[in-house]
Length: 228
Length: 176
Image (cartoon, rainbow over all chains, first blue to last red; front, side):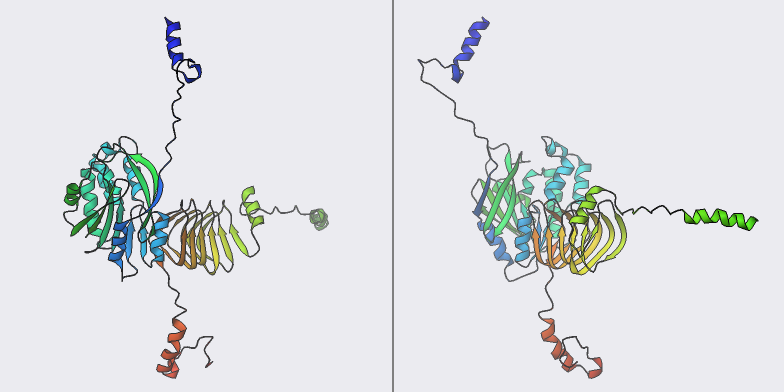
């Protein structure tokens, strides 16, 4: 019996393929390389248009990429890179249980107290990127309250959400501003989002802000320009 | 008698050669020695096994590969925080290169460079700013506009308007 099983197994092995059957080799599995691309971004262009005519604006960047910091500095603004993603990992971990740990009120309190700890109305603009989609409602609410508090009225905010509802894990990108409408995205990781954000949901979470404007971008990304 | 004996006892003691004092460097680690030997002339180096607390004022380029707690000033020179450097200090220099860790504000009159692996917790003020991909900053980065361009043009007017007793003469002032 075991000999038969071995034969059956061997039958499906490409090297021992019977000569009377058309040869079949499975296509080689390509290791999925981390995605990196540079693409135009209309929302980013609108973001910078909102800043035109003013220099030395304090801009909070939650991704904190050095390229963005350099670009904003060259534009005569005052970039403030923030290690938000790193703080999120330190507070809640980056494994499968990171969303469950966001249900612990003590952790949430510590995280909110130690991140985004800035003066009221300190920032003239905020680059949120895709940070919000990794926050459960229990954490999202206090974080948005904090962001509202530290930005001045009328300040533009740029946020990105994945538009694909079916996907279980979304790529975590490093967003780097390369020009006024040019964005470089480098995939760092994959992570389960806290919830799916459709347009209605996004409008709801930014209900305290003045306006929201949607841009459907490539790569199943929904870019949103918010006015404080 | 007693005096003679004393003299006799003292003499051999004097004649014996004193043991050579060991030159104990600030840092005994071989890596620091090689680092110092590699350093070009006119560069002061704080080795990685050295801890300094206080104010450092440098009149030459400075490399900090150890720990400093205080302030570092090298207005006309370059300050490099090496990969092993751990600095809790405000730094003012012409050109600042960060490879290690800094907690404190940094002011580079010409340029501030944050290299891969560097961590800066503090604000940066400079004219030219460069940050490599793996460098980390937690603080704002603002422009330190060179005042020398506008200042000389504005000064003669101000000087002519003020009474002679209050005039401040700069080294380049033609009236001097």
